[in-house]
Structure formats: C-alpha cells, structure tokens
Length: 573
Image (cartoon, rainbow, N blue to C red):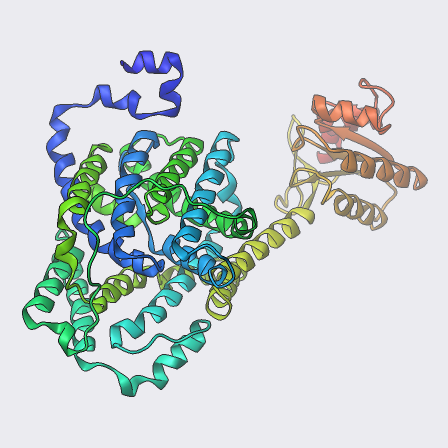
C-alpha cells in the first residue's frame, strides 16, 4: 500500500510507518542495521537488570523488547526513540505492586501485568482525547527532583546485591541504615565482582564511549562466573532463564485490584510520557522533523499493552538509549525493528548463556544507569535561577526518599499545581500611561519612566487572562488603586486584550467592580473586548447591549469618549 493510499484511507494517520516506510532509502539500511546491533547490545543487559528491579524474572525484560521495539516502530512518530524498559518505570511497577501483592489473591506477575495494561489503556485513551499537553503541567524542577530521588531510591536498594548481604525493609533511609549495620557481613567475593563491574562500566563510558559497556560487562561477568565457579564462593547468580517464545496472556485481575492500581497507572503515565517525549523531542529537533504528541501517547499505550500481554515490563523512551541509537547512525525505526528481530533470536535460543550471570553485575548495571540521573549541577542551576523552584525539586527528592516513589511524585505534582494556581490567582495588574508622541501608545508606567499617567483616568491591564480563580483578586487591586489615587478619577479603563473569552464567575466579579466604582462616582470602560467576551458581558448585565458605550476597540477610544475635550496625547505632551 502506498503512503498516499494509506493517508487517504486514514490508516496512515494511526499507523505512521505506512507513511515513511515506502519512502525508505536503501542507503540508510547499513546505518540502521549497525544501530540495531548496537542498541541490542545495550538493551539485553539493561532489560535483565530492570526486570530484577521490577521484581520480575529475567526473561520478562527480554520479552519486553519483543513487544515495545516493534509496536512503537509501527505506531510512533519519532525516528530515533528507543522504547523499552526503563529504570523509572521498573521501580514504579515494583513500588505499586509489592504492597498490593501482600493483600491480593492475584500473584505478583499478574498484578504487574495488570498495572502495565491499565497504564497502556490510559495512554491510548489520552491520545485519542488529544491530551498530549498534560506533561506541560509538570514543572522541570519537579521531574528533575523526582528522577534524582528515584536514582537514590534505586541505588540504595541495589547495594545489598552489590555487597552480598540480605536486603533490608522500609524506606530508603531505613534500607541505607540496614546496609551500614550489616557491613560486617559483606561477601568479599561478591563485592569484588560488583565493584569491578561498576569500575569497568565507568571506564568504558569514559575512554571508549562507542563500545556498549553493558554488553562487555555482561559477557565478562558470565565468563568469569563460569570459569571460576563463583556460585560456589557465595556469589549469587540469576540461574536458569526459560528458553523459547513467550505466550500471549491477558492478565486476569479483580475489579478492586484494577481500581487500586489506577492511581499508580496515572503516575506511571506521567513519568513515562515525560521521559519519552523529552527524549523524542530532543532528536526530532536535532534532525528537523515534527512529532505528534497525541500519536506518541497512542504508540506508548499500544507498546505497553503488548508488553504486558507477553509478560514484559512497562515500556518507555529513555534519553540514554535513544542517544546510543542516534549516535550509532540510526536514520529510522528500522534500527529498532532489527534490534527486535535479534532479541527474538536471543529469547528463542540464547537464554541459557545467561545462567551464570552474577546478580552483583546486574546491581552494577543498575547503579551505573541511575547514577547518571543524579544531576547535581542541574539542581544547583535551579537554585541560581529561581530558588523556590529548586526547593520544589528538593521537596520532591525528600518525598521519594523518606516516603516512597509514588507518594514523592504526588507531593511534587501537587506542590507544582498549587504554585501554578497561586501564581495564576494573583496576576500582576499593570497601570498604563501614554508615551510622548503624535500617536498615543500606552505602556506600563513601572517599566517606562518616560510615560505619563492620564489625569483623571486609571488605565489598567491584567498581565494574565482573567478567569474564575483570579478575577476577584484583579478587581480588588483595581479598587485599591482607585482608593489610593492622589486626585479624583473620572473613569477606569480596563484593557481586556488578553481575554479571548471570559467565564461566568469573572464576568460577575466585573459587574460587582462596576457597581463599586459607581458608588465612588467613577465610570468603568472596557477596551480591546473580543466578541465572546462582549457577548458574556451583555448576558450577565455588565453592559446593556453588545454595542454599549462602555466598550471600546482600544484604550485611546475609551479615553476620548470619557473626556472628548482632551486626549491622552494632550496629557502626554
């Protein structure tokens, strides 16, 4: 089917691969295959590690690649984004499911699959409803703080495996205390393996960044474990990983379990989408093409549903994985399709090779991945720019560390929304004056010292759109300015150019403002009134009819009408 036919039939709108694949150039194939091999080498060890992080068996990480890489390639609009398991999504699955598994009759794997399905369904619904803008309500400091706290949570949780001691319980602080209290029980052999793997990962990243360090460490870890029989020396290994393709299974959950998982699924959606869209946008800007944010939601939703049906992990788009794909020369999603094909071979025939992999190596892989998320310089940059935004991120970090992952995210999101509402509810109200010149130009008196106030007039402009949460505050500011005026006022001119329309509550507050001004023998004039606002003003009784003499196309017209014997230009000159 040609791209034109696909587009005309509407299929291409929902399956973007039908639009770009017919235009694929053979000259791109070599680069895409090399990139596919490269990200396969990166993803195999990471997926096994992230499966452990999510509390699922190692094969779950490999099954993820069979679904997410291929399905995103079909439905996504990014050419470079790699959609697979991520450390953030793995931790969110573990955090949400581990507590519920203690009280539910469903087993852990079923609950995890159910959570991922619910998240995927929410993604698809949000995409169909065109809600791709939702992450704009998550401030950058909140997400940075959440990811920073998540990195601390994960790193501390992996220390017992790196040291060969029993895992502790409770929040991050209690787990760290447990590690410190048990330092005398450290397995020296396990410590050497784990620290050696961690040092090798950082060394490869520093001196040979084009080499997939994770794959190198994975191979060396397996070889060393097999040659020296490390399991006989107290080093835990992952053991058998079932070979063969996974079966497609729809998780069977009780309605009450799904209801409990819903808040966690919403949190997963926000985190996964923020991370994926950020990564995809970075490389879309780099290569000069546009993303469809709503289609991205649908693609991520389908990928997660597919992964859950195969028993895989929650899938998201990682900036580091995508950077490797792009750095290896990927031109299109053919690179991820090729990586999915190699992963299929791995699942079908190569899983016995992972039997001797030490768990300390997995811990090193995870710690290496999350340490890069602790961006101290970025957080300090927030403090230099806007200290209150830094503290917003810092509180989110503390919430994750002291409470748990999802409560920490909720704290950050709620604080972000509270600050947003707080700022929106108290907009700045500019007092305008006229600049000298033949044509009257009205500007903020506080920012233009050469502008002159208008004798007998108060010209004001809210520096934000009026809506139900801030209209009362704006009206109060205007009345305070009127009462504080040094000379009697003839009229207040309210510039509503920022309002394309106006809600009922705001309109009613303006009616009360007019009444309060009339009691002070001051007229209210409205300028730059758009048609929807004009209609609402008439409907609530703010003006008598749509052609009322209380509304004007601009400030100058309002001033001339209120005092036809003089003009703003006269005052300014």
